[in-house]
Image (cartoon, rainbow, N blue to C red; front, side, top):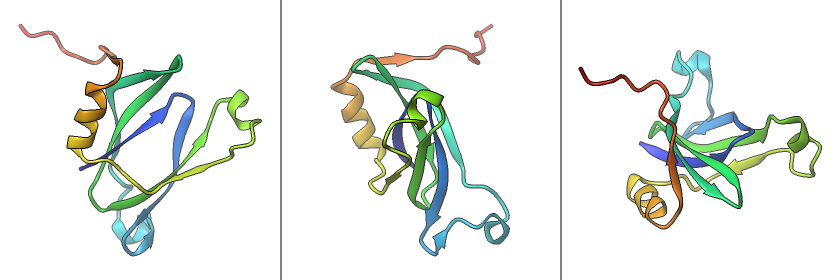
Length: 107
């Protein structure tokens, strides 16, 4: 698995694998991208941790919030996805929070 942090108000756009732009018809599925329940706080901004499958090489992200769309940045391409070790190192040096929804109590 690979990982990346994405600011709240941003979403994943196009995805590339080793053979180019991800084609849902060729792969017969969408890429496996999941937002995890861990985020960092940087300059009062929430940065959510996402997990993405190993086949993905590059991810395009873009703002969804109306205030962000009007800014000069329309999209960003993430080419350096993180390993699990890099995520652990980053979490160790940052203020981390957990979102505790969807967690089942132990009976």
